[in-house]
Length: 227
Ligand code: ADP
Ligand code: MG
Image (tube, rainbow, N blue to C red; front, side, top):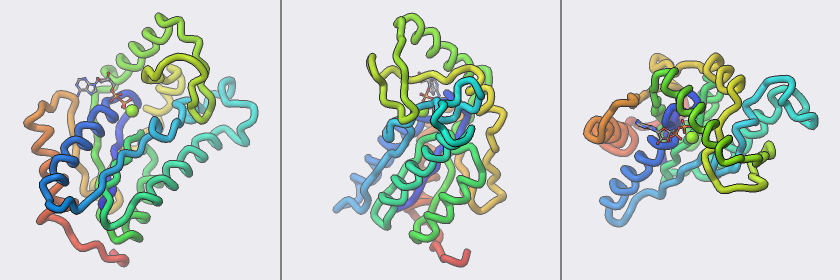
């Protein structure tokens, strides 16, 4: 049914929060008897999209890519296709990813509207230095593993286990620089729910309760195609 677009800086805790939301929604959906909704979590990881697709550094852009950001465009097309296939009046879709381009969030909003289903943004907020630290830690652990794992642009790991893939530092910095903050004054970024790094279980549950109410409860507005 509704589309929930997670948005935040790289390594800011998006996947952690998206999984918490999935567990919360699964419990809420189970309360409706018979269950009214199905639940899906779509992410770069679920579609095996590598962090490298966001890398615009000329020396790391793969030779076969058509232009600097064509791999990212392909990744967005794959994500868009997956969301479009799943969205219906019975399906909750959580899109876990950077979702940092406002034009992209607008496109997703239009898709939800075409399906006559509500959409919202879950902004995962985290201090930049904290997020950078997590990426550095992941890089350190990757080096420690002696991880020579190379990842293809579709993210298929050729060796090694599924440890979280870090970003190259220049790629990480660039994504932070390019991040377009969601603006709740625009209709495609609203309603907007935010979780802070330090939000504990109680605060997180309160935010999820408000989100549920707006998407599936009393607070849900009828979606009209001309809105
Ligand atoms: P992203 O999906 O944005 O790359 P992750 O959800 O993978 O980020 O989180 C990165 C790391 O930070 C994980 O090791 C996770 O356990 C930790 N983490 C995420 N959110 C929090 C939080 N709110 N408080 C403490 N640790 C967190
Ligand atoms: Mg993630």
